[in-house]
Length: 80
Image (tube, rainbow, N blue to C red):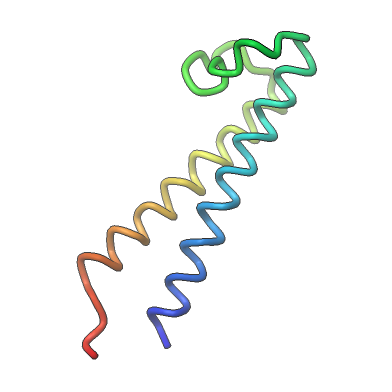
């Protein structure tokens, strides 16, 4: 039962991270009207507004936690 819960939590965290990152990118692009440089959200975070930065932090924390759950599920497989 625990591996199923861990897999569900991992999926939710990874999807949440991706959605939050996309939301931050779209907020940045609509604010600056610059749709060609969406990589700014990943590499130049000092140019983000506070709202965009908040979504960026949510995305990074969610992706990190989801990745950690993935690593732990590989490192400690269920005994079955």
